[in-house]
Length: 492
Image (cartoon, rainbow, N blue to C red):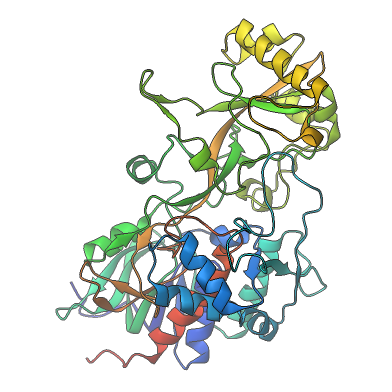
């Protein structure tokens, strides 16, 4: 229902103030539109701000597009992929106009706990020339993490343009007129409902549903899944677009890592091991995988084995077992991203001693004691570790093929364990959209004046290509902002 009088009016409303929202707002403003950004959080930035913010940029856009069409398995229209590949090639120049500089991203140390090469699937044609980039740390962008640098770079541009930002203002509904056009939003501000009119369009960049247990239960496996990013990603936009007739897509796809859940924090902590000397075991104490072979974003797939006899996901949760040398070597929680690190400012202790004292890391004098503390069978865990240590002695992992240079015995006492879970970097599902970032109905017709970008209805419907969520946020954020600004104003 259209209000008789709006509380606020503007040309373009952007819902969600992460990288996609900032790109949309900047572009809409630069195309002559007045813009208001809404964000439900008091601290803006969304998942973009707490990410590594790597960007995959290839040498050849046509080869890149062909490669992406292969890994998306026809879940995304070819013209959308072509538009994305062309847009990625312009990102370096666009970021330069924002005052930023990109540099090649290189991992500071090799990870032994997952596989994270420059390209997720390098054997496929077009994947061999992709490199990862991120915003360089400079006096202009001094923040310690890539996502925070990207976020502050864009936020400064929003501020310099005088774009109005309304924080702690969640959007609750879209306003649709009798012709089916989206002409505004209903939001909450200071515990009051307000109406905001959009003369030209609404752009939804409000993220995914990593913190919505109902949507995760209905759409994703394995179950349960934790989240590593922004707690505000509760799928609010999905409910709003469904009410105005939007089609959904890609609801079952995610970028999923592993994480540890501390009771004191809402979001999980990234987990990363920088040396061998650890194994993963299921809840029964059995090893189940080559611990370093899992793709860095595909833990959801790797942990999805369902046991029909026990009616459970056998590997959820699972445990990492390690020794004193690993405990002392380096922080187990990855310090380059994550909500708990970037926003809540928790600094994991260098030798993990603080986390042992907190009880986050379980310590035991014997393997049998460790088994009791993780509720695993004592003899099973003892046999598992003994077998693994023998593989290390002979230099061959007969069960899972872990490479010889990554085989190191677990020596103790003491022995350590942590309970781990599949933990979402982001979900990919949301409203179906076209190459113009327009939200579509079930018949593939655009819903007039409604656009979406970024994680909210991402183009990644099957396999996720490493370092492309930030690409997508910036490419389709610009497209959405430009197209919304170019709409004719709503007639009175």
